[in-house]
Image (cartoon, rainbow, N blue to C red; front, side, top):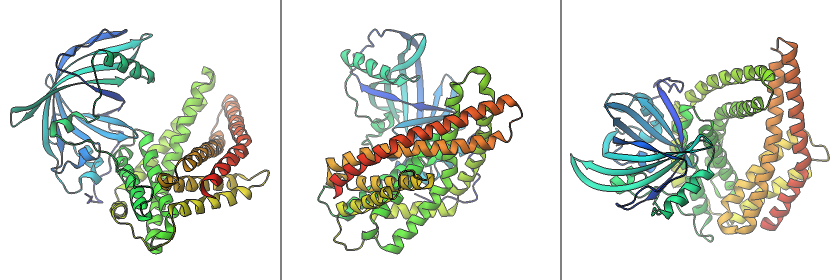
Length: 496
Protein backbone atom coordinates (compact mmCIF):
# COMPACT_ATOMS: atom_id res chain seq x y z
CA UNK A 1 0.00 0.00 0.00
CA UNK A 2 2.72 2.47 -0.73
CA UNK A 3 4.79 3.27 -3.79
CA UNK A 4 4.50 6.75 -5.07
CA UNK A 5 6.75 8.14 -7.78
CA UNK A 6 8.61 11.22 -6.59
CA UNK A 7 8.36 12.66 -10.10
CA UNK A 8 4.56 12.92 -10.07
CA UNK A 9 3.29 16.52 -10.33
CA UNK A 10 1.92 17.94 -7.07
CA UNK A 11 -1.81 18.28 -6.51
CA UNK A 12 -3.06 21.77 -7.31
CA UNK A 13 -5.55 22.40 -4.52
CA UNK A 14 -6.69 25.68 -6.03
CA UNK A 15 -8.13 24.06 -9.17
CA UNK A 16 -11.31 25.97 -10.04
CA UNK A 17 -13.01 22.76 -11.19
CA UNK A 18 -12.98 21.33 -7.67
CA UNK A 19 -15.71 22.15 -5.17
CA UNK A 20 -15.57 21.13 -1.54
CA UNK A 21 -18.10 20.84 1.32
CA UNK A 22 -18.05 19.45 4.85
CA UNK A 23 -20.45 16.57 5.41
CA UNK A 24 -22.08 16.48 8.84
CA UNK A 25 -25.01 14.10 8.92
CA UNK A 26 -27.07 11.66 10.94
CA UNK A 27 -28.19 8.38 9.37
CA UNK A 28 -31.34 6.48 10.36
CA UNK A 29 -32.94 3.22 9.21
CA UNK A 30 -36.56 3.09 8.06
CA UNK A 31 -39.02 0.39 6.98
CA UNK A 32 -40.55 0.10 3.53
CA UNK A 33 -43.77 1.84 4.65
CA UNK A 34 -42.08 4.84 6.32
CA UNK A 35 -43.32 8.28 5.26
CA UNK A 36 -41.78 11.64 6.09
CA UNK A 37 -43.78 13.40 8.82
CA UNK A 38 -44.69 17.09 8.87
CA UNK A 39 -41.55 19.04 9.72
CA UNK A 40 -41.90 22.67 10.81
CA UNK A 41 -40.05 24.85 8.32
CA UNK A 42 -39.72 21.95 5.87
CA UNK A 43 -40.08 22.50 2.13
CA UNK A 44 -40.43 19.48 -0.19
CA UNK A 45 -37.62 18.86 -2.64
CA UNK A 46 -38.11 17.46 -6.15
CA UNK A 47 -37.78 13.70 -6.54
CA UNK A 48 -34.38 12.77 -7.94
CA UNK A 49 -32.78 9.70 -9.51
CA UNK A 50 -29.07 9.33 -8.71
CA UNK A 51 -26.91 6.61 -10.22
CA UNK A 52 -23.50 6.14 -8.61
CA UNK A 53 -20.69 3.80 -9.61
CA UNK A 54 -18.19 3.35 -6.78
CA UNK A 55 -14.49 2.76 -7.35
CA UNK A 56 -12.00 1.10 -5.01
CA UNK A 57 -9.14 -1.36 -5.03
CA UNK A 58 -9.96 -5.07 -5.22
CA UNK A 59 -9.18 -5.31 -1.50
CA UNK A 60 -11.44 -2.31 -0.68
CA UNK A 61 -8.55 -0.28 0.75
CA UNK A 62 -10.43 3.03 0.37
CA UNK A 63 -13.56 1.77 2.09
CA UNK A 64 -11.54 0.49 5.05
CA UNK A 65 -9.99 3.96 5.35
CA UNK A 66 -13.43 5.65 5.45
CA UNK A 67 -12.87 6.99 1.91
CA UNK A 68 -15.36 6.70 -0.96
CA UNK A 69 -14.88 7.56 -4.62
CA UNK A 70 -17.82 7.49 -7.01
CA UNK A 71 -18.97 8.66 -10.43
CA UNK A 72 -22.47 10.08 -9.98
CA UNK A 73 -24.93 10.65 -12.83
CA UNK A 74 -28.14 12.67 -12.72
CA UNK A 75 -30.17 13.82 -15.74
CA UNK A 76 -27.23 13.47 -18.09
CA UNK A 77 -24.80 15.33 -15.82
CA UNK A 78 -21.85 13.42 -14.40
CA UNK A 79 -19.42 14.29 -11.61
CA UNK A 80 -16.72 12.51 -9.67
CA UNK A 81 -17.15 12.73 -5.90
CA UNK A 82 -14.49 11.90 -3.33
CA UNK A 83 -15.27 11.72 0.39
CA UNK A 84 -12.32 11.79 2.77
CA UNK A 85 -12.07 11.88 6.59
CA UNK A 86 -11.97 15.25 8.35
CA UNK A 87 -11.77 14.61 12.06
CA UNK A 88 -15.03 12.89 12.94
CA UNK A 89 -16.72 14.39 9.86
CA UNK A 90 -16.03 13.90 6.17
CA UNK A 91 -15.10 16.30 3.40
CA UNK A 92 -16.76 15.84 0.02
CA UNK A 93 -14.79 17.00 -3.02
CA UNK A 94 -16.52 17.12 -6.40
CA UNK A 95 -15.13 17.42 -9.91
CA UNK A 96 -17.42 17.79 -12.94
CA UNK A 97 -15.91 15.34 -15.41
CA UNK A 98 -17.57 13.06 -17.98
CA UNK A 99 -14.62 10.66 -18.27
CA UNK A 100 -15.15 7.06 -17.15
CA UNK A 101 -11.80 6.78 -15.38
CA UNK A 102 -11.08 8.38 -11.97
CA UNK A 103 -9.47 11.82 -12.41
CA UNK A 104 -5.71 12.08 -11.98
CA UNK A 105 -6.12 14.72 -9.26
CA UNK A 106 -8.08 12.23 -7.12
CA UNK A 107 -5.58 9.44 -7.74
CA UNK A 108 -2.82 11.76 -6.53
CA UNK A 109 -4.73 12.65 -3.39
CA UNK A 110 -5.12 8.93 -2.66
CA UNK A 111 -1.49 8.04 -3.44
CA UNK A 112 -0.71 6.47 -0.06
CA UNK A 113 -3.93 4.47 0.05
CA UNK A 114 -3.62 3.13 -3.48
CA UNK A 115 0.07 2.45 -3.87
CA UNK A 116 0.45 0.44 -7.06
CA UNK A 117 -3.11 -0.94 -6.95
CA UNK A 118 -5.65 -0.07 -9.61
CA UNK A 119 -9.03 1.57 -9.05
CA UNK A 120 -11.86 -0.58 -10.36
CA UNK A 121 -15.68 -0.34 -10.23
CA UNK A 122 -16.91 -2.26 -7.17
CA UNK A 123 -20.64 -1.41 -7.04
CA UNK A 124 -23.38 0.54 -8.79
CA UNK A 125 -26.20 2.04 -6.75
CA UNK A 126 -29.41 3.58 -8.09
CA UNK A 127 -31.10 5.90 -5.58
CA UNK A 128 -34.54 7.46 -5.76
CA UNK A 129 -34.35 10.43 -3.39
CA UNK A 130 -37.14 12.49 -1.88
CA UNK A 131 -36.79 14.90 0.99
CA UNK A 132 -37.15 18.26 2.68
CA UNK A 133 -35.09 21.37 3.07
CA UNK A 134 -35.61 22.72 6.59
CA UNK A 135 -35.36 26.44 7.30
CA UNK A 136 -35.38 28.34 10.58
CA UNK A 137 -35.69 32.13 10.63
CA UNK A 138 -35.41 32.13 6.81
CA UNK A 139 -32.04 30.37 6.89
CA UNK A 140 -31.47 26.72 5.90
CA UNK A 141 -30.43 24.51 8.82
CA UNK A 142 -30.68 20.99 7.38
CA UNK A 143 -31.72 18.77 4.52
CA UNK A 144 -33.59 15.51 5.07
CA UNK A 145 -33.15 12.85 2.38
CA UNK A 146 -35.24 9.69 2.18
CA UNK A 147 -33.35 7.30 -0.11
CA UNK A 148 -34.67 4.14 -1.75
CA UNK A 149 -31.53 2.27 -2.83
CA UNK A 150 -31.18 -0.45 -5.44
CA UNK A 151 -27.86 -2.29 -5.72
CA UNK A 152 -27.02 -3.43 -9.27
CA UNK A 153 -24.56 -6.21 -10.08
CA UNK A 154 -23.93 -7.29 -13.67
CA UNK A 155 -27.11 -5.48 -14.68
CA UNK A 156 -29.27 -7.31 -12.12
CA UNK A 157 -30.75 -6.22 -8.79
CA UNK A 158 -29.00 -7.87 -5.85
CA UNK A 159 -30.22 -5.77 -2.92
CA UNK A 160 -32.73 -3.09 -1.94
CA UNK A 161 -32.90 -0.93 1.18
CA UNK A 162 -34.11 2.45 2.43
CA UNK A 163 -32.47 4.95 4.77
CA UNK A 164 -32.75 8.50 6.04
CA UNK A 165 -30.02 11.13 6.11
CA UNK A 166 -30.21 14.43 8.00
CA UNK A 167 -27.44 16.69 6.71
CA UNK A 168 -26.49 19.87 8.54
CA UNK A 169 -26.61 23.14 6.59
CA UNK A 170 -25.22 26.10 8.50
CA UNK A 171 -23.81 26.32 12.02
CA UNK A 172 -26.86 25.12 14.01
CA UNK A 173 -25.85 21.59 15.06
CA UNK A 174 -28.68 21.42 17.61
CA UNK A 175 -31.22 21.42 14.77
CA UNK A 176 -30.00 17.97 13.67
CA UNK A 177 -30.76 16.47 17.08
CA UNK A 178 -34.25 18.02 17.10
CA UNK A 179 -34.98 16.66 13.63
CA UNK A 180 -33.62 13.25 14.58
CA UNK A 181 -36.03 13.01 17.53
CA UNK A 182 -38.95 14.06 15.32
CA UNK A 183 -38.10 11.40 12.72
CA UNK A 184 -37.64 8.73 15.38
CA UNK A 185 -41.12 9.46 16.67
CA UNK A 186 -42.34 8.89 13.11
CA UNK A 187 -40.77 5.42 13.03
CA UNK A 188 -37.10 5.89 12.13
CA UNK A 189 -34.61 3.88 14.17
CA UNK A 190 -30.90 3.36 14.77
CA UNK A 191 -28.56 3.02 11.81
CA UNK A 192 -25.43 0.88 11.98
CA UNK A 193 -23.39 3.82 10.67
CA UNK A 194 -22.23 2.14 7.49
CA UNK A 195 -22.15 4.18 4.25
CA UNK A 196 -24.36 2.88 1.44
CA UNK A 197 -21.37 1.27 -0.25
CA UNK A 198 -20.66 -0.85 2.83
CA UNK A 199 -24.22 -2.14 2.84
CA UNK A 200 -24.05 -2.83 -0.88
CA UNK A 201 -20.83 -4.84 -0.47
CA UNK A 202 -21.87 -6.40 2.87
CA UNK A 203 -18.79 -4.94 4.53
CA UNK A 204 -18.54 -4.32 8.26
CA UNK A 205 -18.08 -0.70 9.25
CA UNK A 206 -14.41 0.16 9.88
CA UNK A 207 -13.83 0.55 13.58
CA UNK A 208 -10.71 1.27 15.66
CA UNK A 209 -9.21 -1.68 17.46
CA UNK A 210 -10.37 -2.09 21.04
CA UNK A 211 -7.73 -1.06 23.59
CA UNK A 212 -5.82 -3.87 25.29
CA UNK A 213 -6.87 -5.09 28.71
CA UNK A 214 -5.53 -2.93 31.57
CA UNK A 215 -3.19 -5.72 32.68
CA UNK A 216 -1.97 -6.52 29.17
CA UNK A 217 1.79 -6.32 28.51
CA UNK A 218 3.25 -2.88 27.84
CA UNK A 219 4.13 -3.96 24.29
CA UNK A 220 0.45 -4.45 23.43
CA UNK A 221 -0.45 -0.97 24.70
CA UNK A 222 2.40 0.64 22.77
CA UNK A 223 1.43 -1.23 19.60
CA UNK A 224 -2.22 -0.19 20.00
CA UNK A 225 -1.35 3.48 20.59
CA UNK A 226 0.95 3.59 17.57
CA UNK A 227 -1.66 1.94 15.37
CA UNK A 228 -4.35 4.48 16.29
CA UNK A 229 -2.14 7.43 15.43
CA UNK A 230 -0.76 5.93 12.22
CA UNK A 231 -4.33 5.30 11.07
CA UNK A 232 -5.29 8.90 11.95
CA UNK A 233 -2.27 10.32 10.12
CA UNK A 234 -3.05 8.32 6.97
CA UNK A 235 -6.72 9.30 7.13
CA UNK A 236 -5.80 12.98 6.89
CA UNK A 237 -3.07 12.68 4.28
CA UNK A 238 -5.49 13.24 1.33
CA UNK A 239 -7.06 16.33 2.91
CA UNK A 240 -3.65 17.76 3.72
CA UNK A 241 -2.60 17.30 0.11
CA UNK A 242 -5.81 18.97 -1.07
CA UNK A 243 -5.23 21.95 1.22
CA UNK A 244 -8.77 23.37 1.30
CA UNK A 245 -9.56 22.62 4.96
CA UNK A 246 -7.13 23.70 7.68
CA UNK A 247 -8.42 20.93 9.95
CA UNK A 248 -6.91 18.19 7.77
CA UNK A 249 -3.36 19.43 8.22
CA UNK A 250 -4.04 20.13 11.90
CA UNK A 251 -5.17 16.54 12.51
CA UNK A 252 -2.22 15.16 10.58
CA UNK A 253 0.15 17.25 12.67
CA UNK A 254 -1.58 16.15 15.88
CA UNK A 255 -1.09 12.51 14.88
CA UNK A 256 2.57 13.21 14.14
CA UNK A 257 3.03 14.86 17.53
CA UNK A 258 1.24 12.05 19.35
CA UNK A 259 3.38 9.43 17.63
CA UNK A 260 6.51 11.23 18.80
CA UNK A 261 5.08 11.44 22.32
CA UNK A 262 4.28 7.71 22.42
CA UNK A 263 7.79 6.87 21.25
CA UNK A 264 9.26 9.27 23.80
CA UNK A 265 7.19 7.93 26.69
CA UNK A 266 7.88 4.31 25.71
CA UNK A 267 11.58 4.92 25.07
CA UNK A 268 12.73 2.83 28.09
CA UNK A 269 11.04 -0.25 26.60
CA UNK A 270 12.07 0.34 22.95
CA UNK A 271 15.33 -0.30 21.13
CA UNK A 272 17.09 3.10 21.54
CA UNK A 273 18.45 3.52 18.01
CA UNK A 274 15.20 2.35 16.42
CA UNK A 275 13.08 4.76 18.50
CA UNK A 276 15.47 7.70 18.09
CA UNK A 277 15.58 7.28 14.31
CA UNK A 278 11.80 7.14 14.00
CA UNK A 279 11.40 10.12 16.32
CA UNK A 280 13.84 12.07 14.20
CA UNK A 281 11.85 11.43 11.04
CA UNK A 282 8.60 12.36 12.77
CA UNK A 283 10.27 15.57 13.94
CA UNK A 284 11.13 16.30 10.30
CA UNK A 285 7.50 15.76 9.28
CA UNK A 286 6.25 17.95 12.13
CA UNK A 287 8.58 20.74 11.05
CA UNK A 288 7.38 20.39 7.46
CA UNK A 289 3.75 20.82 8.57
CA UNK A 290 4.38 23.46 11.25
CA UNK A 291 4.59 26.68 9.19
CA UNK A 292 1.33 25.89 7.39
CA UNK A 293 -0.43 25.20 10.70
CA UNK A 294 0.88 28.44 12.21
CA UNK A 295 -0.47 30.39 9.24
CA UNK A 296 -3.84 28.62 9.49
CA UNK A 297 -4.14 29.69 13.12
CA UNK A 298 -3.29 33.30 12.32
CA UNK A 299 -5.63 33.45 9.32
CA UNK A 300 -8.52 32.11 11.40
CA UNK A 301 -7.80 34.53 14.25
CA UNK A 302 -7.47 37.65 12.12
CA UNK A 303 -10.51 36.73 10.02
CA UNK A 304 -12.58 36.45 13.18
CA UNK A 305 -11.07 39.65 14.58
CA UNK A 306 -11.87 41.57 11.38
CA UNK A 307 -15.53 40.54 11.62
CA UNK A 308 -15.71 42.24 15.03
CA UNK A 309 -14.24 45.56 13.89
CA UNK A 310 -16.12 48.58 12.64
CA UNK A 311 -16.47 48.55 8.85
CA UNK A 312 -14.02 51.43 8.32
CA UNK A 313 -11.34 49.64 10.40
CA UNK A 314 -11.49 46.34 8.50
CA UNK A 315 -9.51 47.11 5.30
CA UNK A 316 -6.02 47.03 6.90
CA UNK A 317 -6.74 43.69 8.54
CA UNK A 318 -8.25 42.35 5.31
CA UNK A 319 -4.97 43.15 3.57
CA UNK A 320 -3.08 41.29 6.29
CA UNK A 321 -5.32 38.22 5.86
CA UNK A 322 -4.79 38.36 2.09
CA UNK A 323 -1.05 38.50 2.65
CA UNK A 324 -1.18 35.52 5.05
CA UNK A 325 -3.28 33.52 2.60
CA UNK A 326 -0.70 34.14 -0.10
CA UNK A 327 2.02 32.91 2.24
CA UNK A 328 -0.12 29.88 3.07
CA UNK A 329 -0.43 28.93 -0.61
CA UNK A 330 3.32 29.16 -1.00
CA UNK A 331 3.88 27.06 2.13
CA UNK A 332 1.32 24.52 0.91
CA UNK A 333 3.42 23.88 -2.17
CA UNK A 334 6.38 23.22 0.13
CA UNK A 335 4.24 20.75 2.13
CA UNK A 336 3.29 18.95 -1.10
CA UNK A 337 6.94 18.67 -2.06
CA UNK A 338 7.65 16.85 1.19
CA UNK A 339 4.56 14.63 0.97
CA UNK A 340 5.58 13.65 -2.57
CA UNK A 341 9.10 12.74 -1.47
CA UNK A 342 10.63 9.30 -1.12
CA UNK A 343 11.55 10.24 2.46
CA UNK A 344 7.89 10.63 3.42
CA UNK A 345 6.89 7.37 1.72
CA UNK A 346 9.64 5.57 3.62
CA UNK A 347 8.51 7.15 6.89
CA UNK A 348 4.96 5.90 6.33
CA UNK A 349 6.29 2.41 5.62
CA UNK A 350 8.28 2.46 8.84
CA UNK A 351 5.34 3.76 10.85
CA UNK A 352 3.08 1.00 9.56
CA UNK A 353 5.72 -1.54 10.45
CA UNK A 354 6.12 0.03 13.90
CA UNK A 355 2.38 -0.13 14.52
CA UNK A 356 2.44 -3.82 13.62
CA UNK A 357 5.69 -4.83 15.33
CA UNK A 358 7.48 -2.17 17.40
CA UNK A 359 11.08 -2.91 18.37
CA UNK A 360 10.61 -3.67 22.07
CA UNK A 361 13.13 -4.71 24.73
CA UNK A 362 12.61 -6.63 27.93
CA UNK A 363 11.87 -4.23 30.79
CA UNK A 364 10.18 -4.36 34.21
CA UNK A 365 8.67 -0.91 33.63
CA UNK A 366 4.89 -0.54 33.52
CA UNK A 367 2.67 1.99 31.75
CA UNK A 368 2.26 3.70 35.10
CA UNK A 369 6.05 4.06 35.32
CA UNK A 370 6.28 5.56 31.84
CA UNK A 371 3.54 8.12 32.50
CA UNK A 372 5.01 8.95 35.89
CA UNK A 373 8.38 9.75 34.33
CA UNK A 374 6.85 12.27 31.91
CA UNK A 375 4.78 13.81 34.69
CA UNK A 376 7.88 14.31 36.86
CA UNK A 377 9.60 16.13 33.99
CA UNK A 378 6.60 18.46 33.77
CA UNK A 379 6.62 19.07 37.51
CA UNK A 380 10.32 19.98 37.49
CA UNK A 381 9.78 22.42 34.63
CA UNK A 382 6.87 24.09 36.46
CA UNK A 383 8.90 24.47 39.65
CA UNK A 384 11.62 26.24 37.68
CA UNK A 385 9.26 28.84 36.21
CA UNK A 386 9.53 31.44 38.95
CA UNK A 387 7.14 34.32 39.65
CA UNK A 388 7.48 36.01 36.24
CA UNK A 389 8.41 33.33 33.72
CA UNK A 390 9.90 34.18 30.36
CA UNK A 391 7.92 33.39 27.20
CA UNK A 392 10.42 30.68 26.24
CA UNK A 393 10.00 28.98 29.63
CA UNK A 394 6.23 28.95 29.25
CA UNK A 395 6.58 27.44 25.79
CA UNK A 396 8.79 24.71 27.24
CA UNK A 397 6.18 23.95 29.89
CA UNK A 398 3.58 23.71 27.14
CA UNK A 399 5.69 21.08 25.36
CA UNK A 400 6.20 19.07 28.55
CA UNK A 401 2.48 19.30 29.34
CA UNK A 402 1.68 17.76 25.97
CA UNK A 403 4.18 14.97 26.53
CA UNK A 404 2.84 14.24 30.01
CA UNK A 405 -0.72 14.23 28.71
CA UNK A 406 0.03 11.88 25.81
CA UNK A 407 1.93 9.53 28.13
CA UNK A 408 -1.11 9.58 30.43
CA UNK A 409 -3.32 8.69 27.50
CA UNK A 410 -1.05 5.73 26.78
CA UNK A 411 -1.59 4.55 30.36
CA UNK A 412 -5.25 5.59 30.56
CA UNK A 413 -6.73 2.11 30.18
CA UNK A 414 -4.69 0.80 33.09
CA UNK A 415 -4.76 3.89 35.35
CA UNK A 416 -8.47 4.71 35.10
CA UNK A 417 -10.17 7.83 36.47
CA UNK A 418 -7.14 9.50 38.12
CA UNK A 419 -5.36 9.51 34.73
CA UNK A 420 -8.52 10.78 33.02
CA UNK A 421 -8.76 13.70 35.46
CA UNK A 422 -5.10 14.58 34.90
CA UNK A 423 -5.59 14.49 31.12
CA UNK A 424 -8.49 16.93 31.46
CA UNK A 425 -6.41 19.34 33.57
CA UNK A 426 -3.41 19.02 31.25
CA UNK A 427 -5.60 19.84 28.25
CA UNK A 428 -6.76 23.02 30.02
CA UNK A 429 -3.12 24.03 30.57
CA UNK A 430 -2.37 23.36 26.91
CA UNK A 431 -5.28 25.54 25.83
CA UNK A 432 -4.12 28.45 27.99
CA UNK A 433 -0.49 28.20 26.91
CA UNK A 434 -1.63 27.74 23.32
CA UNK A 435 -3.62 30.97 23.49
CA UNK A 436 -0.56 32.68 24.99
CA UNK A 437 1.68 31.43 22.18
CA UNK A 438 -0.86 32.27 19.47
CA UNK A 439 -1.15 35.83 20.79
CA UNK A 440 2.62 36.16 20.77
CA UNK A 441 2.81 35.01 17.14
CA UNK A 442 -0.10 37.27 16.20
CA UNK A 443 1.73 40.30 17.60
CA UNK A 444 4.84 39.36 15.60
CA UNK A 445 2.74 39.14 12.44
CA UNK A 446 1.10 42.50 13.15
CA UNK A 447 4.41 44.24 13.77
CA UNK A 448 5.82 42.84 10.55
CA UNK A 449 2.74 44.04 8.69
CA UNK A 450 3.01 47.48 10.30
CA UNK A 451 6.20 48.07 8.32
CA UNK A 452 4.13 47.99 5.12
CA UNK A 453 1.38 50.32 6.38
CA UNK A 454 0.99 53.37 4.14
CA UNK A 455 -1.58 55.39 6.09
CA UNK A 456 -1.91 56.74 9.61
CA UNK A 457 -5.27 55.01 9.94
CA UNK A 458 -3.76 51.61 9.10
CA UNK A 459 -1.04 52.16 11.67
CA UNK A 460 -3.68 53.14 14.25
CA UNK A 461 -5.71 49.96 13.63
CA UNK A 462 -2.65 47.72 13.80
CA UNK A 463 -1.55 49.43 17.03
CA UNK A 464 -4.95 48.69 18.59
CA UNK A 465 -4.68 45.06 17.56
CA UNK A 466 -1.17 44.75 19.01
CA UNK A 467 -2.60 45.91 22.33
CA UNK A 468 -5.31 43.27 22.04
CA UNK A 469 -2.68 40.56 21.63
CA UNK A 470 -0.88 41.77 24.71
CA UNK A 471 -4.16 41.71 26.60
CA UNK A 472 -4.76 38.13 25.42
CA UNK A 473 -1.36 37.10 26.73
CA UNK A 474 -1.91 38.87 30.04
CA UNK A 475 -5.30 37.24 30.52
CA UNK A 476 -3.82 33.83 29.83
CA UNK A 477 -0.82 34.50 32.08
CA UNK A 478 -3.09 35.34 35.04
CA UNK A 479 -4.78 31.95 34.76
CA UNK A 480 -1.72 29.82 34.09
CA UNK A 481 -0.53 29.39 37.69
CA UNK A 482 -3.89 28.15 38.92
CA UNK A 483 -4.31 25.85 35.95
CA UNK A 484 -0.83 24.38 36.42
CA UNK A 485 -1.47 23.80 40.15
CA UNK A 486 -4.66 21.93 39.32
CA UNK A 487 -2.85 19.79 36.76
CA UNK A 488 0.01 18.98 39.14
CA UNK A 489 -2.44 18.10 41.90
CA UNK A 490 -4.29 15.65 39.67
CA UNK A 491 -1.01 14.31 38.31
CA UNK A 492 0.25 13.54 41.81
CA UNK A 493 -2.93 11.59 42.56
CA UNK A 494 -2.51 9.62 39.34
CA UNK A 495 1.22 8.93 39.27
CA UNK A 496 2.83 9.45 42.72
